[in-house]
Length: 130
Image (cartoon, rainbow, N blue to C red; front, side):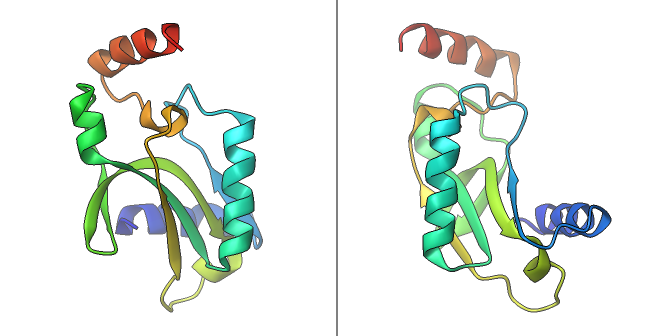
């Protein structure tokens, strides 16, 4: 998980006194559904880790012509960051290692993270064809 993301989550959970699981969903992911988020919550609960991230293969975004602005390494591979995460608010406050599990997916719900006007144009075409 990028250090800046960890710092942002630490500050947000501390300021809001959030000591349980905290779900983050970026505002620029228009295809995220409640059904998808329910699945992520179930997977987080089952994995037993402190942090659950959702990543997209970089080449999947590039093949569609989508930008890749933020990346992270997971188990030796680099992925595009979707911004959908769940973190244990209490665990992130500590100084120890944050145990992470990730979902690597090509699902449109997180594939369509809009960072540029071109991303928006591509997303509109994909959503119209769904």
